[in-house]
Length: 266
Image (tube, rainbow, N blue to C red; front, top):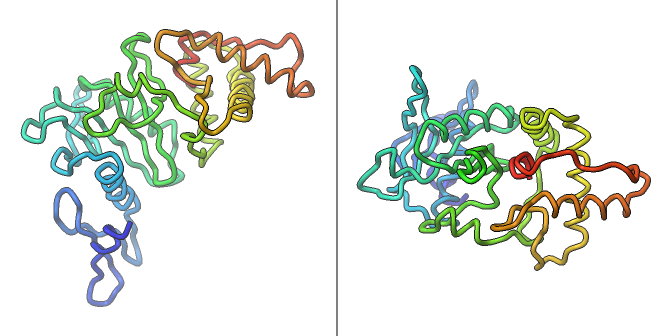
């Protein structure tokens, strides 16, 4: 954050503020009494995070990259390539869609997924300054989108991340639970056609049981693991959750979600 603050430039009256873009090295207005530009601030902060926490070199990034979608052309906020000297679409490793806080999570993720689908890449991030959602177009699950467990570091492949598993200490707080539930409802409805709210309610308690029953250094069961089915693990967690919270669920209640849908929403 200190790097970004150092790049803020006020005008002579101290009313308007610009910052120097970390990638384009030019002034961009981010505040005036009549207009603010929160998306640009979030984008610059995320560029810092990508560089300092994940090791992505600045020169591997490009901003406002044109993405052809049928007859229309849209601009992706941040695109990362695996080769700084060969920035064509075949070398894209990550797409980032930036939104200001309180914008629709579902619409933002839909936009990100449309970018990923239009390019020969599989991974993207939606970020709004409060939380991030990493989306993965899984070739092993009929190219359906799912939430990816964590962002790969520079030089780390998707396969490398898939071979590692989240521990309780790795979990991040959900900043906007309502938006997350709304997004999951749409994902469930489009896949299984069941009562989405009921099924998500069951999943929340299964996940809650998993987290409460684990020590901070233990791997969670509520996640996809290479070579194993997710459905039996989640069903087992829900069975234990029913026993723990007997006043919430009936004995005969069961999860009604398919393996494909569980992979997409967990």
